[in-house]
Image (cartoon, rainbow, N blue to C red; front, side, top):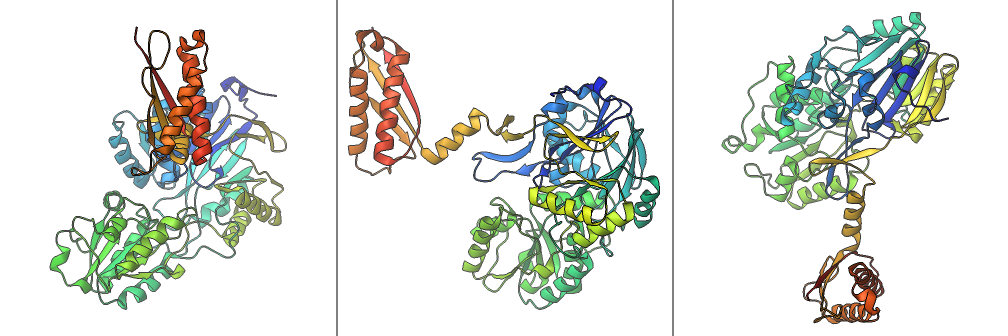
Length: 557
């Protein structure tokens, strides 16, 4: 049965969970809770496109379902400031126009994003305190502080008349996070006394045994590494990992080095962190223009580009086109980050370029820890909270299945694995998937949002992989060709390639048009179709390609 799920469908005794992004994939988180005629959104994130989507940098969930019901959308609660949880707000908020709630650091970063889009004065952004409580429509919200690879990660307790849900967001149990508060074990344990209905939780590392590890361990290892280096050092890490930035800055100071920040996002994150009370009490940073006045063994570059991003600071240094900073033979680059799946090729290309320039590469797992819970941490969370239902999210299908198995082994009565668009009824009665609503991805293409399966994207993909050919035909008053067809191509022939193939294409097109009857030769559509078919067939026969084709018909009387 296909239900509409308008506000009137959401009765007081029912509670729904609907992921539109981030379930069955990592990134693009968008989660909805429906109750008592209203919807609550938790997180609204992006992911980054790869070479399969030429001309597209950013992808995000398709919000059409909730856009059609935006009058019933009570608000958006953001769990933390990572791009896959807040990055889509500037793009999609104009379609929703709802109140937004976030803690101090997340608000600081989001305000800068909104300002870039001219939305700073439009979005009603409410800054809520750590461990704060507030109401959004029929939903009573409590934030519980956790630890992650960014300041102020929050689990969200959502209390309704139909039951309570713990939405974990991204988290781990770091005994020494170094930046920000530690996880609130007391509040997590207290949830067991509330008979929590469901836990909707992070599955990223559900297949990884043990625990994520502590930032304190990274600091000790990184200190050992940097203290053994004798020339200029660059450390590449995620700019959003403020605890790692704190670690790098502290290690630099302890080893007699001055820190220079490289990369726009690095400067922005540091600015937000200091505005929120983090990264205080350190020596002033040195500017890009100042580092050449310091001995090479007294400089540490804190860089963006750990994932091989071509426009980031580290790639520009590797290519030798950074305007101010360079690395010489014997200098070292330390990669203090994990490889995001899909980025391997870009990272290896970057490292190869650095090695070719004589730079030493240090890429050791011991100088990074994950921000997501391993199996032992998931088990610990279930032992503390003891929900009735486990709903794995934030992971690919294999991660969700592994998470569900952990919950089963922890004797959680019910585990339910959904996907984007799966409408899950959590209450009343046994939890179940009751419908599949439309979901998908949007691409930010130029200055517009389009579906990833739109003709615009499909046309560009075809152009990239098959090239293009255009042909111009000039016809006289009788519909006969006046001169030879004019052909131009992109991505099919080398500039100095012999013209025999082009001549063969011209002959095929001319013959196809010549075979048309008098009536068809006076019909532009018929002429275009005949020429296009001849063009495609001949190019495919000669080159094995099916190019994007265009035919222009010009007539004169």
